[in-house]
Image (tube, rainbow, N blue to C red):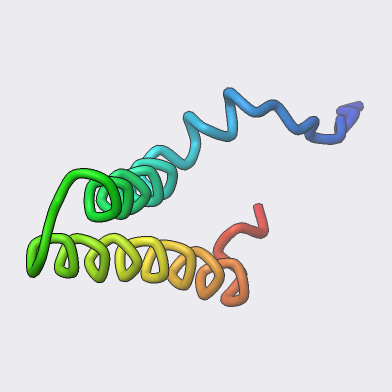
Length: 73
């Protein structure tokens, strides 16, 4: 007779499961930080917009897949 155990939240295993999501959000944050503190003018604006877009696209895709039911295992 099999006994099902509840899944515990472990931050390191969650990071290893969702490497692409975490990496894209971290990349967006790095781009925003570069735009804010290291770059000037047009390049700063481009990096800021790209960073925000990368974060929004990553979070939006994750929410879409969650709503679709892709994470119901």
